[in-house]
Length: 188
Image (tube, rainbow, N blue to C red; front, side, top):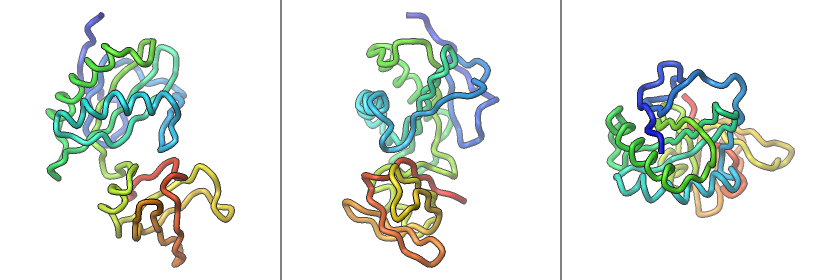
């Protein structure tokens, strides 16, 4: 296996702290696989990386994959479980472990760049626990299929149960099925 150079990518989006492996210029039009229904590769990556990340004491928040030929990208969002902020040392530590797991399993099958990032201010929301933790916060939610003709919701998060999250949008409360959410993030 060819060792990869690890460095902080100064051209990356300003979402939060992150570490990139094998950095090159950004692809002009990457295709990201993200959200709760991200498909087979995303599920495979979660299955592979969740135990690695949790074994380090972090939570795996989300994974994005862009397939852009030699500019493919795997972006992994982590958070600390002790409610402290994620720092550069955390990203570097997780990056080393994630890189080793990806190299051993080779789930992608071609060259890619790995970035490990903190969730930033617009952190992804993926589980019922994430929605419950941030009840009362402003969020943006996108559904895989429309509900009453609408797929996108931006408003204040409300109650969460095992199957649904409520969000107040323009003084109307919507009950959204967790299983139907394709993407959700906090907004500032």
